[in-house]
Amino acid sequence: METIDTVQLRLTALWVALMLIYLLGDVLRIFSGDFKAGEIMGSQVTQPMWLGIAALMVIPILMIILTMTLGQGANRWLNIIVAVFFFLFNLVGLPTYPSWYDRFLLVVSLGFNVMTVWYAWKWQ
Image 1 (cartoon, rainbow, N blue to C red):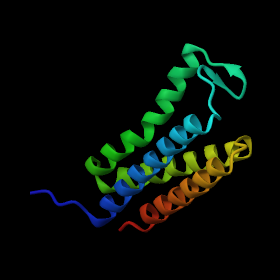
Image 2: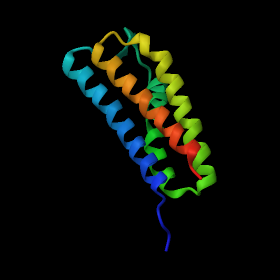
Image 3: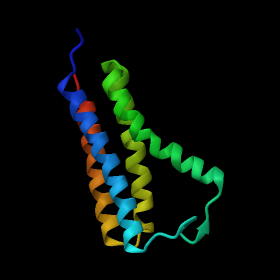
Image 4: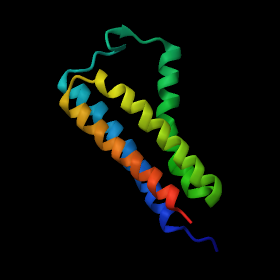
């Protein structure tokens, strides 16, 4: 019988929390009126752009599954690489969000990324 490592559970929980933070930001953006359907930052969004956004947002969902199924070695490095990617991606995007709630949620997500890297790095 396989056992699930405590670190696997922590990393999985961090990816779930990250997804919920992203979804909460989207919901607040819609309800606050900061969202215009079909536009991002005043530009019309094309189908290829929507596909790219969908692919980007599927990554944390995949990380939930992969963290629970991959072996420790691959799992450790994949978590580090993907968390660093999202940290840098969101850090670069942080100044483009005018709302305080978005910036707050992004800072929280950066913290989750740091925790993910920390737990994966220390995983023995």
